[in-house]
Image (cartoon, rainbow, N blue to C red; front, side, top):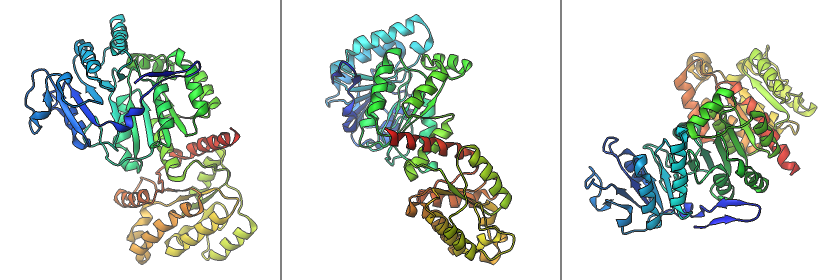
Length: 478
């Protein structure tokens, strides 16, 4: 493990991460019912050892995998997760260096995040004792979540590996994002919680994920960056070909103060950061929910450029509102081509409806083949880049749809909403949360299986469409 550098780029080598074969949890706590140990051991494909100077027995744990020191473990250790008192960390670092451990996570806090000179000096000592022989995540971080290998710091993390990488200074943000992944229908390749970033920082981790064959989308929660790392980050971003989405914390005056307390990060001028993101074609978002939703859109449909969309609604008024919101964010709702318009007009047969863009279906919605036909015709228009459809949840029950609602209706509806993949054009359904939550959840889960991103509010995703489109346009210019 050597520091890789050149006259222009300085990054730390963590390429070994994809081949971690052994883990040690140092300082498992009886007060926590050995939770962190059990979480790491639950699904990991190799051996997980418990290290504690006095604990010899742990309920329901192999006593042959408990040692007083990491040095005494007979097997080589690739990764160590450290949860000991701050005063004991330096000794544990010495043991890990002597053992040849490749990567460690320091869960303990009150280092530079304490804002004291003592805490800052302790981090300097950490680096000196590590001697660049062991790479460090933290202090004040949760470490590595790697579902493919079964590495997890909390119980109940999803075990399905995906293609989304997430880097965050906040462990709490990571927990929300990881536990919410299954509901969103997304999966992670790797998640890094690096806390204060005394050694491995946002630059090293972005570089790693940009080269990682298991990762195609990179998400970041960033509070700050060391001044001497900006040039390295610029070079990495110049070489990177994967979409990077960033949530920047500490943009306000109060938020900046909170960031310094949280991870000892200097947030910097928010306008400078926004300019930096634009210059380097990074997608910036304003909330964790936006971060995850934009990942879901890209994961499901790839990077797209939505200039013109078709709008399809059961309510004419709702369709008008959707048009207003879309055009406010720079997405056009243009007339269909004359050929498309003729085809659509020939299919509409009820009064009080409209075959023009926005399409007003009204009671046409209940004819199970009608929506499928209309969606196909609209998507076949070469001037249309995608389709947004509103479907109130109370229409998904027999009481509203009378005898027409049955299982074949729902199956056909799901099939209709999946046509975006056939035409390589996003379809985004809106089913409001205002009624029939069980019916809505049932349909939502079926759409997740089909990789169709359903939302409950147009403002959850419409602001993100222009961000993805802008990224796509700039990508073409590179």
